[in-house]
Image (tube, rainbow, N blue to C red; front, side, top):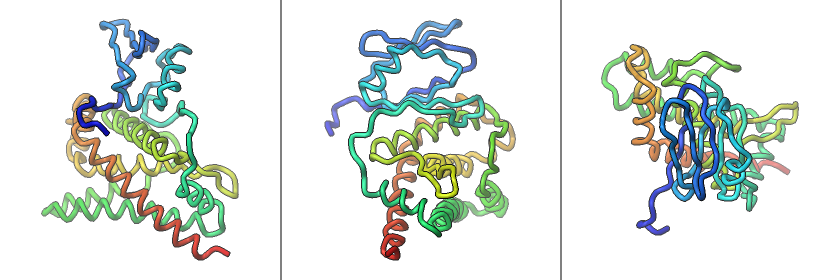
Length: 255
């Protein structure tokens, strides 16, 4: 990669109110009723995370597909509603292995153990850097599995959940992996959701006190993400590497 090329960045369309997303040459044009239009050249975009209430033109969605830009649509709580993904150009062995792992008897337990170990890895890493007991207690509480179904979140929490989901979906797209895999009893195993959860947990462990005190604004949360997004992405990549090891070990035990 040419280091002189401008870095491609995520675009977050998570503001309150409704916007229209259209095309302006080789760029996305975002029009808000209460502010000047914003223009985002597609050559500078890595992914788009958008509130589902915004109005997208067909030309804007086509431009993203042509330039292989995933668009992730979320609700007000930051939970995924759907995504626009370019056609995958390749199938990766890891994707095939994860798909088989999700389908095979006992595979779900192995996947659950991987998720649990990734949570514990992050909690212990955080606790090792904290001296007071209160921080370790907070880490353990935040590491508990999230309840199923939608939940109410503050605007900063929703912003972070949406951003982490967008990062996970784009990372899997870049690596030629599916975002979810079918389960034998029906339903899906949401790989992107698990990766996003790891990023959210890391953010919670870092800023948990501010969240508890209601002192973290959505704009501050977004600024924090911009400054630390590379660390969250690196954590997801390492988690995928460990998932590959789990899938490889399971594959050796299959007939």
